[in-house]
Image (cartoon, rainbow, N blue to C red; front, side, top):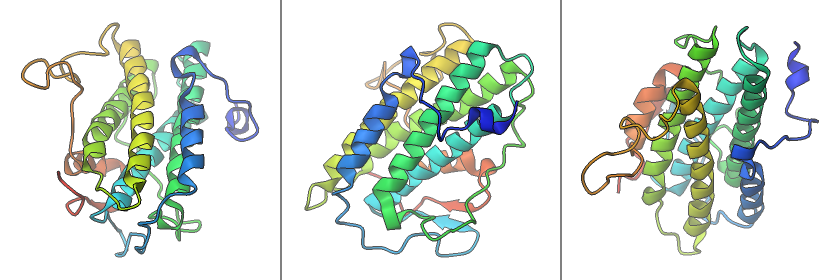
Length: 246
């Protein structure tokens, strides 16, 4: 089937039950963010060819999340463009919805960042992600890959919201609301794909802390940990050491 048959643009967004409000919440946040961003005074990165350095502020954090959403949208688009032969009709419908929502997330963050998006001046030289390390020829392989990316995404969101820096105009609160909304949708994505790989695995010990003061909460990963995990998919060197750490 041709790519155009699964095009996001020009197609009514179908809303499956487990993702029902994701697009609406992200889109509404984008409208709120249209009047925000008074701390957008920096020059977008990358400043060094072949390197993407995230700045030590809220815009650096948003650009970090923006990269993650670009990565996920590209992954789902790759699957949608060439479904495994053993994908069912339900699998195809689910992955089209997942792709659509990741595109909404990507575009919402791009809109929020405006001229401060790290790729605002990239023109036609957008990042081309490398998924050759992932096996994507069967249903099990594709769902396993989706689980890996979604688990990393959820852990990243869990680690980034607390790093937002207080801004005099309160814009950090608007950013926080956006990140929380996106995080909740990513958690639903992760729960769905995990259960397709193994029933009732959505809260297994590898993603939910079992003991201690964080028992019952999702795993948290720092930007440095996350960029190390996704480096093999990204065609530039990621530098996250400047991002806030606490």
